[in-house]
Length: 355
Image 1 (cartoon, rainbow, N blue to C red):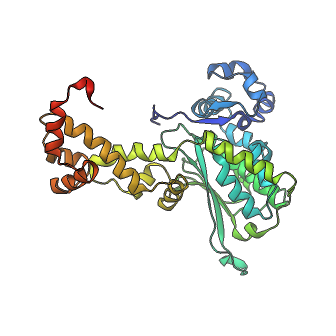
Image 2 (cartoon, rainbow, N blue to C red; image 1 turned 60 degrees about the horizontal axis):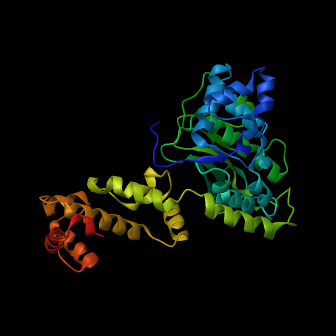
Image 3 (cartoon, rainbow, N blue to C red; image 1 turned 45 degrees about the horizontal axis):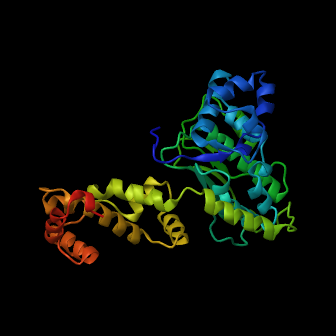
């Protein structure tokens, strides 16, 4: 998968909890494998250490191949649970219901890893039982251009399955189904045994689906003692390490402008987000998609207009405008002058004095 050289994603080293245990079970030396990917045993000893997301994903794929264990990621996730999420797992224990806990995990996932998000979907819950019961889902969504392969995805869903089991207080809950985007492996017997439900491959999303009524259950591991302290910590941490959705949106706006198809929906698709989710996250940063589109266009317009000889119609097309007149109106709104006057004025200013 193609990487985005401008974005560097990380994850807590706690994500690798149990890796040493699984290596011993397989009778494989862990140290050399870690060094091959620029990691160390010392990093694994500190669950709050930051590990590059790409190296983490490639490490799991390498372990699966080199150690002849195609279900390596799944097996690692099977020995993880809510506790591997560190502070997020703790805040989940502070909530009243399973739904509140899962929403807290979804909201704070950026403090655990910046390379992926969780998307929780739950329809309105009714009191009806039987085949019409509502289905909720938790989707694991890698960020654009990450190298998230089969191993990291299966590990993530196995870990979330165990976390849900802890929250509802059942050792082996009956999930509705599990879906994976990757192709079906030669065998999925271990996955079917672990999840205990139908598994579909080649699906639209990587998701764990379950009875929506579980969302209203009381959290089985509830401990509200440190709620204010933990919530304050997560709020600060999320602000510090979350990959800025604003910058990611600006990046894809710039990439899509000249195509004439630069819309909120198109950018959301590039970010692997639902358009409403993108809108909500931008609002959390105090901006809208329209604000960013206008800002990127303005910055790009200044560059294009200063290029001597570039026709203004060509500049308008590069910015996604349907006509030169639309471009002229926007340019006048930004600068209180026309593109022609702006270009002429810039020609009179020595290059070294331009601001």
